[in-house]
Image (cartoon, rainbow, N blue to C red; front, side):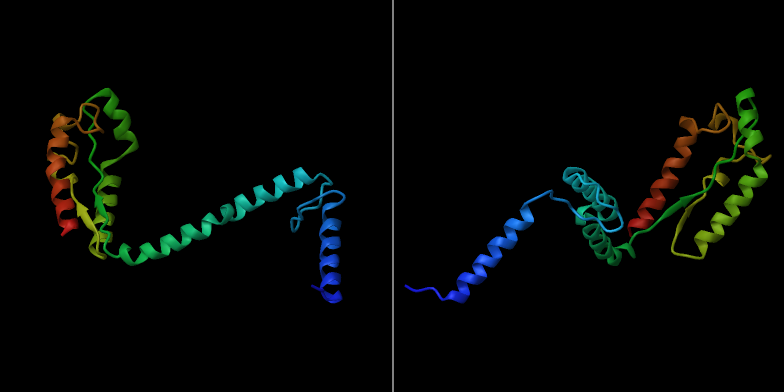
Length: 169
């Protein structure tokens, strides 16, 4: 069987060009970063740049997955809850009270309620259930004036459950 000369020349040229690429130092060119002259270092630098710029292609996959989730995101319900009142009945509670004035808490809760009313957001009003007649947290609901005790959580739990049930409908 006779092989045409043109085919032999093409194969020879490909072999010569491939072996020429392997001779000398091998370097991974990285746009914008000068060659160091050390192939392993250049390869390491290129892989780190790829990792930070595109996470070896994984970032594109994550973006695609996130785009697929957007259709389902419209069914996600966000539940906001009011900021709890504070009291100043103990020494430790006075520190918290100084940092969180009842006026600021009330203003924030008012804003939050309006924000939730203007969109499809649920709002759980713990504040009105836990405040006393003077605008402070009921003393028996938090020993330190800030973090709810078991009695405080007993008030909060059914309110939270009702909001979750409403969100799941």
